[in-house]
Image 1 (spheres, helix red, strand yellow):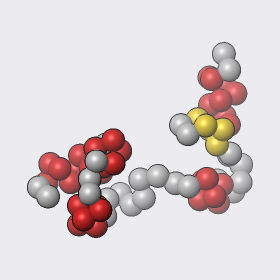
Image 2 (tube, rainbow, N blue to C red):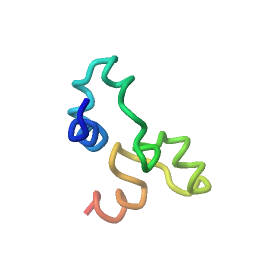
Image 3 (cartoon, rainbow, N blue to C red):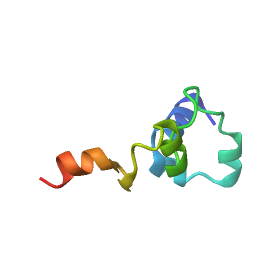
Image 4 (cartoon, rainbow, N blue to C red):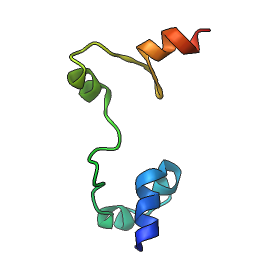
Length: 68
């Protein structure tokens, strides 16, 4: 996998979903660390103050932006 494909796989979840299991196994770890946090990891990182209400929406953004 060339450098451009590796970076694209790190940034683009749709492209990453098209990769074979073999390609995913060869993909180096993202230098910034985890790309996504699971709900329990997010709650732990914020001390339990933020809960997700949708995939890309936190409770704060849901109340302040999504409902208006």
